[in-house]
Image (cartoon, rainbow, N blue to C red; front, side, top):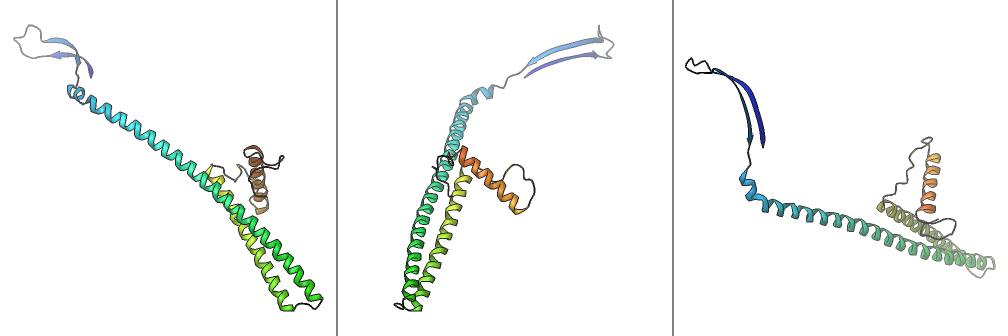
Length: 189
């Protein structure tokens, strides 16, 4: 610490030669104990830097893992969607065959109802897997920090909001993910 003191002084003792004077002083003090702590402080600073670096690395790995898991979930959802679409196609063909067989009196009406039920179930499963694929794609967006909400919305009705979100999503796919004109990419259409 560095202190500078200055000030007038007075003493009422009548035997003093000067009873008024000005006192000026500079004081320099240094805590010698800090010098003894210097190696420990340097080690603590180094440990803190290493800890900070490890935290940053762990956070980066967590984000990368989240993105990778999101992409794998999306790929799994896409394969499930493809399977559901193939199943729907098969069930629709079976329904067509059953309807034609019922018209030719070769098969019963009950078999047509069963085929219709299987086709409806396959269609429902296809929509459910499509929904899962969209949710997985949304998690990938979230993992990389993309927000589907536009900055400004003209009005708050559902149609305007849906159009704004679609525009934002299409812009990302065209710019960030290189989807659109070339027809490549991983976005579910």
